[in-house]
Length: 513
Image 1 (tube, helix red, strand yellow):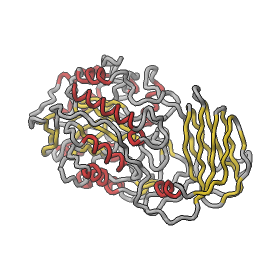
Image 2 (cartoon, one colour):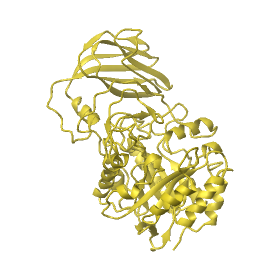
Image 3 (cartoon, rainbow, N blue to C red):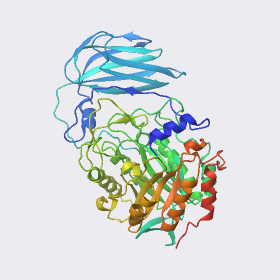
Image 4 (cartoon, one colour):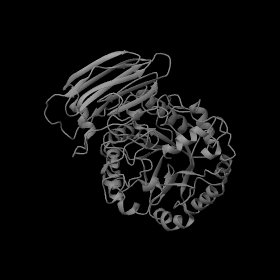
């Protein structure tokens, strides 16, 4: 599900997931792309312990700083603290007052910190507008040896509780089927549960947190009561890794522990789990949106950690990246499928539900092959769910560009939403999806209908039943029907829209052979 849709659904839902303590707008002149593809990581190294401070100022309330002359690239670091109230903090860089700023950032929250890099020099000053206490620092890099392009600024998470194993649940790929611990062919039919949009502030309507539901064990039991066998959890790489300024209460070790605990509850209820990288960003940009593709800066470290955590749990499937949407317009490639597999430079950097950052530098995408390799390097043999292009709707060249997996445990993922001009028609299912399903398992890890009807999703589920394809509707939330909320309350009572899925789940067999 694209995060733009998440934003729209939150605004229309009176009981929807409420996030966000921050509204952030960045208008930055960033450094040109590193030819190694690691501009953001190189920047982090360059300013780590090898910088010359030009200005340090602190205070409370509005302030215009003294002017400073800078040459070449420089960095601005900021922090603020508003006490018990969520307030607005804004800092802007001007060459001359009342002209357009070189860079400007606005955030709303209790506290926060961050930094930017700027390439425009000259005599500049800062304008701070807030009622909070704040501190800002301007610095330039001191001469230093060229940093190695192969290192990464992403820390390795630690001190997270180990997941519970030995539940008796297991699944693996066999030919074009998924089989369970008894070797029986099964289909994955289940539910999407968001676990990514709240832990890093992404908008003005939701408080920070990890999951929206009040009880993990209650949620697991309720989903099992729908006759489902799988839950897809959407994850945020910053929250899992504990980087880029998230609230410690809902990121890092606390985030990982909450996910591990929820998975234990799901397994106890007899449910398999799909873990999906859903929100990401390169460098020091917070993961408040999904991008055209996974980022090389953090996604490989994310999957090294996630796969290392769950490699002993055969009831978990890894989904390396949700809804890649690489095109020749947003990436430096003439072949989006090759970039999808091998990586390339991406020109567009998004924040806050697919809103491009003006002037952002190109960044290096991690291809599906490198993501599969990172997972396998941990020793994990779990099945891997691979999304197609065009927001996972396009599987036309999936078989041609499929990553190599030494475990032969790949599953194709196709997302299916009813929308005007969409390829998601019965003719497309028969001509594209069915041939893929004849070669490897296919899962529709997101499916939905936004017109409050059920004719389209029922048609697709019937087609998928006939072709051995699994599906998981979006989304286990108490949202309105045009936001595709499946439930009326956290006890799992189906909404009018969700009733279609509830009834159909009970009418089909999960074990097919």
